[in-house]
Structure formats: structure tokens, C-alpha cells
Image (cartoon, rainbow, N blue to C red):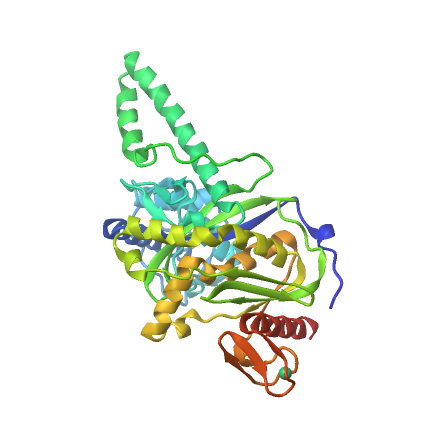
Length: 436
Ligand SMILES: [Zn+2]
């Protein structure tokens, strides 16, 4: 194992990107699709403008030049690029346009100032990540407010580990208080007889009405806890159980010292499942988070809000334990996790139900959290093949059998808890990969 000192290379704050599932109503989902179409159109417009070498009139539909024609790609700032769309897409949220401009700018940066064939600038944008930035705020642990929507959207924010929910809710509350102050100023101006304040008030209320509902739960916060950075993107996804859905990916600034840095010079293997949400095993220790014995899946699909309550009540039974185990796991010098393939697992009706249950306990998210938070502690994550891990002996690498959650090896006689054995197999595979 290579020696490293994560403390010497750690910055003051680490930016992590972490996702939450959204559960929109059909009307809200239609709005998301509309937002996605606008973001796509803005991207296309900006790229078409680049393909014209920046010479076209950006306020009219842009025709495509011959793909082979050579253009000198203009080197302009993100704000100027956003301005290109501003005139052609009036009424579109400025933060959305600026976010698209930022994505396009980053993707085309290496061509700025260079002369290239026009066709160079038309690839790489199949998947649109809709930038929301300041246009989305947490309105509580299970709701988000999105600029332009009349109602808040149900979101699984409560499922984020280690205080990240608090970071997002605090940022949402700060935004909301700012908006309330702004409204207060307008109301005073209107009552003083300043007529334009009335229409400003109307516009602001229409825009932020959904945000200014009942006060959400207060979360302890301060400079020493994670804080939301502005960037947030909406994405269309296929969930682990193969259902279509939407997620929002947030960037969160993690302050130095919020999680203990790597201090255990050992590798740990992580196994996730339904009976046990998480089983982790190192050379010395093992940690387990038990699953929820009875999850009534039927209850979970009554309505968007009911289903959120059921998911939350299932998850909350494990939340504190999950946090503790995640901290322990992320303190190791190597973390071995399985390269999961939920799509393959949910290939049958039974498999899909199993994955749906694992989504409720957080098991399907555990590996994402480990990956997202590993830069904070400095614990490298090694993805290993899960093939045969549940029936391979962690002692001698031969095949064994699992009966009633107990693993037994016919070759060397080793016997162990089946999930702990699987975690130890993951640990050994990670050590092999880290060493090679
Ligand atoms: Zn064996």
C-alpha cells in the first residue's frame, strides 16, 4: 500500500457534488421537461453562434454553416455568451441562461481563439444538465422550491447523510429571509405611494410565492458546518429500479475538519443489500446497519406526498447508524466498494421490487455517498467487481455456500456471516487493485 498524508494536500474546503431524488407531480414533471427543452435550445443557439465564428446576429435564428468551413472561435466571457441567448430567449430565467453559458464555455474553452472546422463545435451535448443555481432552494427537508413553479416539489433531501440536509435547508432559509426582506421594502415603498413598487411586488410574489409558505424546520448552522455553493443542476435520470425520474445535484462546500481525516491504516470493504443496508469489514473490525424488516411497498405509491412520508419513516430508522458507519468507513486508507449494476439487478419483477426496497432504506445511495465524501477525508475509493462476492470465501478465495445468511467454505472450512464475508471479499479485491 502506498503511503500518503492526506492532511498535507487537503484544502480548507472541499466541494462535493451530491444528488437528491425529486418526486414531481405530473404538472411539475412537464415543467421540468419544458426547462430541459429551453436549456437544450439555449445550448444549441450558443453552439450555432460559435459555429458562425461569432459573426452571426444572435437575436435571429442561426443557420448552420457548412460543417467543413473553418471558423475562428471567439474567446468571450461567460456573461457575454449568456447575453447571446438573452436577446433570442427573452423571459428565460437569467440564472438558467448563465448556467448553460457556463457549461458551453467550459466545453468549448480549448477552442477559444483557435481556427477549427465548424463541425468541431457540435458534439458532446446529448445530455442536458439543466442549470438551476440560485433558481432552486430547499424549502425544508422534503421540499424544494424551483423558480417558475407555483408549488414546491417533493424531494428526498432528508436522505442526505452527515448533516448535508441541514446545509441545504439553511441555504434555502437564508434565501427565503432575503426575499422576505426585499418584499418588506417593496410593501413600504408601495404604501408610501411609490406606484412602481406595486408591480414589482406582484412580480416578486408570483415568482417566490411557493417559497414563502409556512416556516420550515430550523436546522442548526454556522460557519463550521457544510454550506451550499450556488451550483445545482436538474437531470433526467433512470432510477435504480428502472423507473424514470429527476434528480438535482447540489454542490456543497465542506469545511476542513468537519469529517475526521483518514487515520486508520487499513482497507475496508463495503457490501450493501436489503437485509442489511450496509456491512463494512476491515482487518480488525466490522460494522453493520440492519435493514427495515417490513416495508410496505404498496403504501409507498399512494401519492407523491404519502410516498415521501413512508420513505422517510423507513429511512429514519437507519439514518443515525448510517452516519456513524459512513464516518468509520471514510477513516480508512482504502475503501473497497462493489461496482453495482442496478439495471441488471432490476431485470426481473422480483429484482425490481428488491431494488425499490433498497432505494427506500438508502442502500442504493450508500456507495454514491461514499464516493462523494471520500475527497473530504482523503480516503480513496476503489470500485471492484462484485462477481461472485457473496459465495466466494474471504479466507481462501474458493467457492462456498450460503445457508440462512451464513457463509461456509467447503475448501478451508471458514464460516462467517454472509454479508461480512462478502465485505471482506470486497476488501481483498480493493487491496489487490490498489496494490497493482
Ligand atoms: Zn475458504
